[in-house]
Length: 613
Image (cartoon, rainbow, N blue to C red; front, side, top):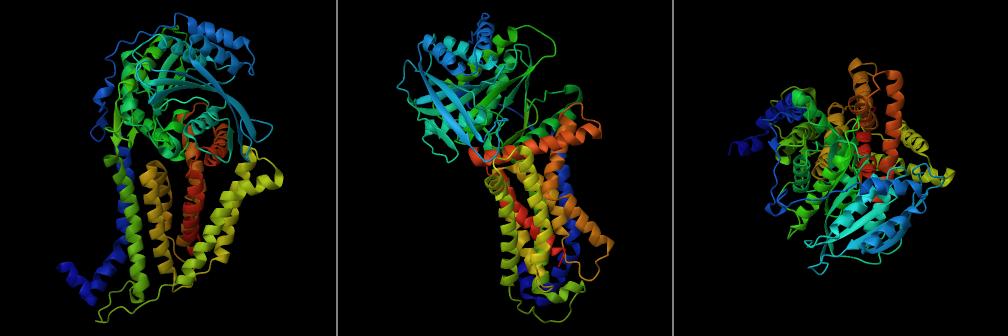
């Protein structure tokens, strides 16, 4: 009733509106600080929680895992080192055939306007080898994929897969078919196999049809063994566009690795109990960074896009030779994970799909990590509300309370200004997005360096030109800022529901400069105005991308403490990252590259152009 009285009373409504206008910046800054501080509280044990296996049917560790390689893996590696790269697929096919399984090959080629893997042309060709071990007691209605990536001089993964297949073929307890996939084309090769298996057509991928299928793929396990001497094993769950596998499959893998006395880790970060907060914070930052890129961490990430839970066991080399016994332990952990999935009667659904791992035994659920983003975005709500009030009641722009009992006059919505600046910035964003494709048609396939150059050049050109071609009258800019702040809020919230980390990084960077965006008026040499322009440049999306690359190099890579070595490494890392983002958007279905350039960047350009009116 009190709110209704305030709304109906013009004088009291103006008094409360004036309070909102005067306090909005302080409240917005307070909300922003609360959101950022909240993020740094997430690694504290009292805030996060212990992991657990929610699906009882998994029963990790209940079955006896008896895998022992007996030196066969090392013998297979020796044989692999003697054959040529072109003979590799046929040699692997012969090994699977000798075991008595169905074996098939699939040729594929990837065509993109950017050079990949130092190829001489923008077409990458490869061969996938896949073999099916039929379950003895079922009719091939469900399947589990076990996959590896083969690279030159990197044969331990393939050797272990062949040895595991030989071991699994002797066991009668399989309730699901096992599909063993070996690709020499990286994640693009596995994408070609997945599209062929699922019957999906893609413009950039040519592949031969799958000759023999099994049932619905219920889960996938990827093995990546760098050497027989293992220091620790990373459990990877990040997929395309920031999607995550069900937490149960990750917790199962961690529990079985621990049972086999192998140190588990997430994103290569081993738990450090003597400095627990810093260790957890590093793991959290790496989790956020990986998820924000929208890139698959490994081959498993391609399955997650199709709602197939998957996990990768990625080994990290030990600096000292501690023997080959850990290959047997890793094999038993993989065997136990596959047997746990083999127990399932339905897809995993009990545990979380939205979580942030901070260690091998602790995690942060969505109910804890999403409120900080909400606090930061609420600052945009307050600023938008204030701009709406100022647009509808010009008398309040002076900051003095109005005592006259006169209701607010109707102010028309400036559709012409809204459409003009919106279409201009949208066109600029789209041109930046397609600039690599246009340049590839004009100058041929691009290298990662030229791709980075063309994108950055397009970004700078759009920043310079938009203020001159987007004109907003002094009477309309409040409504323009209100509308596009609301649109920015909507876009960031929508991104946050799909990829929390990407929305968080963008929000932390662009929120404060966008709050203070305002026309210069007649005081072009005002220091506050110059500081506002400088802050928008320093916290623009392209520089935020570079800051994230620099943070990764400084915190997670060693040997780059000097600026003379760190700056070239940051540029190299950013160049490689941008090319990966572009390739993933063209081939793997990632929307991060397109969304940032066609949605976030145009809205930032609107706020940028307001400063020059």
